[in-house]
Length: 419
Length: 166
Image 1 (cartoon, each protein chain N blue to C red):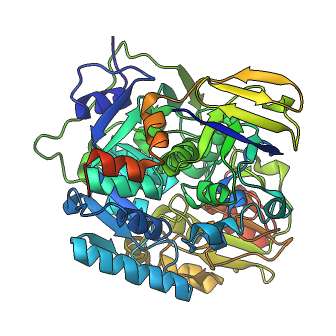
Image 2: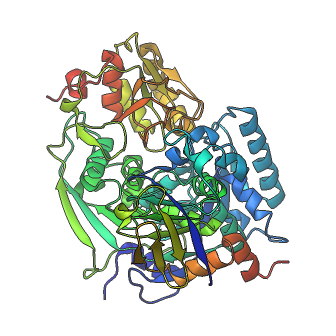
Image 3: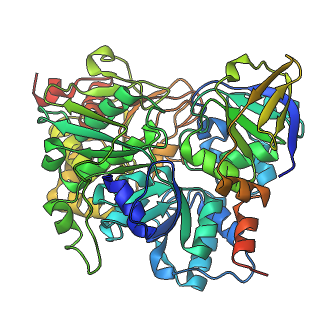
C-alpha cells in the first residue's frame, strides 16, 4: 500500500517498511527547540530526572523570543536561567532580538527534508514547509525528549490540499491561509497531517509558504508539509549526505483530497474570536480601529514588511491609529534596512519593536485596552489574546497597512490597486 | 490500573483555548499552584472558589486549542480537577494533559451532562457514571502508551523508570 510523505518520514525514522494511520511508533528526534515561555518548566522538569544527560546538544536550541528583550524582571530571570542551563549543557541559544523560533530555525538551516523536528511551540508545524515532519509539544514532554532523543508518535491521517491558480493584485499568501482556515474550521483537521501543494505553492517563495503552513495549526493539524523543490534546496544549500527527500506514492491513501483555485480570492479578514472566522473584507470594511499590527512568526516576514511599505509609501498612518511593527527575524530587519523599507514605514508613522513574538501573544508589547480594536497579521485572535476585552481582526499585511492609513478596516485594493 | 475519579461537573463550551484557560500574561509563572490561582480567570472567575479536589471538567469540542502552553493543563490539574471529558481535544493539550498526569477522555455525549452533576470515571472498565442523572457511558480507553505514562504519574516519572535513572 502506498504512503503519504508524512507516513514515509515516520516509517523511515522508525525503521519500518510500512506505517498506517492510527499506528503508534517510537521515533528518534532530529532537532528540538525550546522558547522562553516553555523552557523554564522544561528545565525544571529535566531536573527531576536525576543524573540525566542531554541526548545530543548539537540537535537542541533555546530561542528567546516570547519576552524579548526581557519585558519583566521575571522574564529576565527566566532568560538568565535558560542561558545558564544552555551553557552547562553546551546548547545553542538564539538570543533576544534575533527573532521568532520558526523563522530563526529555518534561517539557521535546521529545518531540512525528512527530519522530525519538535518545538515547544504550536506553530512549529510551519517548518513542514521544508519537507520535514515538524510539530509542537509541551514543556514536560520536551524535558523527556531532551533526555531520550526519542518520541512516540501516532501516525496521522493525511489530507491533501491542492492549490491552483494565481493570486490577484494585493492578495497575499496570508489571505490564502485565512481562506483555508475559514473552509476547514478550528478542529476539522485535528490530529491530521496536511500535504499542501500545487501551482500556487510552486509560485511562492519559501517564507511566503511558511506564512501558510504556520497558520495550518489553527485548524488543529498535527503537521503540515509541502513539497521540496529547487527553491527549498537553494534555501538550505542543497541536500546533505544520507538525507532523503520523500514524495507521496501514486497510490498513497488520503483521508480526503481538496482542490482550491485561488485566482478569484478576495482579501480575507478573520473576525474576533477564532482565526477560522474568515470573511471577505467587504463584509467588515469601515470598522474603526485603534491599532494595526504587523507581527508574529506567520505575519512579519520580509515580504510582509515589503507589502506594507508598498501601501504606505507616500502615505501617513491615520492619527487615531498606532501602527506597531514587530518583524519576526533580525535578518528581515537587516534586509528591510538595506532596501529602504524601514525608512518608508517609519516615515509613514510606524512604531518599530525588536524582532520577537511581540504583540501576538499580548506579551507586554502592543497590548489593547478593553474595547479597543486591532487589525493584525498575527496568528491568533481569541478573546483576550492581546489583553482582556480587546478585539482582534486578522488580515494580510496589505489589508493591515491600508486599514492603518484609513483608520478603519479597508480593502487594500482601494489604495494599492486591483479592483 | 485500578482507579476511579469522582467529583462534580464544571461545564465548558466548544473551542476553549489555552489563553482562556490561563491568560498569556501568566505564562511567566512556573509554580503550578500559582498558575492554578489564575485558572479561567477571564472567562469563569468563580471557578477557583467553587472547585474541589477531584472535580471534573466536561467540555465541548476542541478543548485546549491554541498555544502549546502546558501552563493550561497544569493550571487545571493543580486547581484540583482530576480529569477533563470533552467531545474532542486539541492535539497538544491532550498530549500535555497525559504527560503531566491529568486524565483526559473523549465522549460524544457530553451535552447530556449538567453543571454540578456528580460523576465517577472508572478507568478500569472505561465507564463514566453520572450519579445525578442515573446514566452510564462507555468510553474508549487511551492507547497503552498513554495509559502507561499516566499510570506512572506522567512522562517524567515514566522516563525516569525507562532510563533507569536514580
